[in-house]
Image (cartoon, rainbow, N blue to C red; front, side):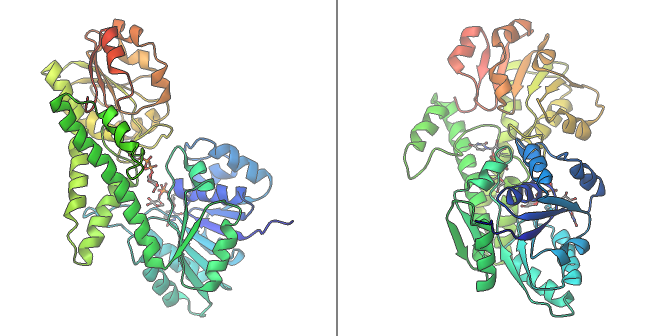
Length: 437
Ligand code: UDX
Ligand code: UDX
């Protein structure tokens, strides 16, 4: 049977857009990835992924070879030759927490100006509720030839590091639609994926995204708050999380205590939800607390360090892991940024290492007195007075911790992700501090 192939343009080839484009090609569609960053398009045309995401580059090349993915640097050129257009440009936070939607608006105007026949326009970026309505209004305004179109909300639930799997094997697909025609097209697009599709109105789909991400962030802040109590009373948060997670009503996921949530989504989405609620007259104090707990949590590891080492001025501190979570080179809102800043402000000598994010970290901190970029963990530990773990990379599990302990001046180990066994580390001779244990 011939596959039902639809011509789709994905505007914005960042984390979300590129994964969406590559996966939609993989399930049989014909994709044009669009980005106004010409350098990015140049790289992509050579089969080079501008981001680090496991499996992405291979799948990109495979589908390019089959002719299922091509690239363009303008919406104007892509719109006329596609039936469906996904908008996946960035929606950065403004200083007040609201989402900056200028790029979404710009793309809408470009689409409206270049439409030649019926189009389905899908909002994929994370946007505040009622953006769908604004998208429709804007396209109507600039669509002077009154060409028919539909707007759809299809929020993403892609975790960096497992984005391909999250796209191809999702728990559910959420689609907010207003017309039967658009609903049918969205059904055809996702037909090859075996997952329930929840069809709702546009506002509901938008709110599902807000509610889901803020709930996950809440789970993390909740467990971190409990971890701080556990520490004071001699309980172990790892056992608490495990036992809590076995209750099906709670579930085992997103209950790992640590240095707090980072990334391009959770911090931004929580603030955006608070802001959005305020706009409709609701004070979402509850979520403000979720955010505050997370901010505090980042400082806890430095406090722990100071409790043991007293003054950290001139002390040599090794920092393992910089990305906001493993298997990504992404540093957006990474706890490591605030923590390393704090260490540098206290005049410590900081030796940082990350398996893939070190390059991006260099871009942020550059040449900085007191900051040293290491090529491996062993380069960070010689005569160090403490090791701080901020990201739970698998690589760290394979490190010879005995060797680490012996090379250090003082064997302080602050495990900000609870990746090591406390008893084992203490047996090796480490002064071990985890989170909530
Ligand atoms: C972004 C948002 O941050 C997120 O909230 C949303 O869910 C999806 O889009 P991400 O894909 O990680 O996430 O953003 P980013 O990596 O910054 O990619 C956006 C891309 O859009 C960039 O490559 C940028 O060059 C491109 N872009 C931006 C355009 O092509 N046109 C524009 O007008 C603006
Ligand atoms: C998130 C959403 O999960 C995803 O659905 C999409 O909407 C984009 O945003 P992502 O930011 O890639 O994905 O990573 P995620 O795995 O959700 O982790 C976010 C942060 O929470 C990381 O900093 C991670 O270290 C932290 N986290 C996660 C914890 O501290 N504890 C946990 O138990 C789980």
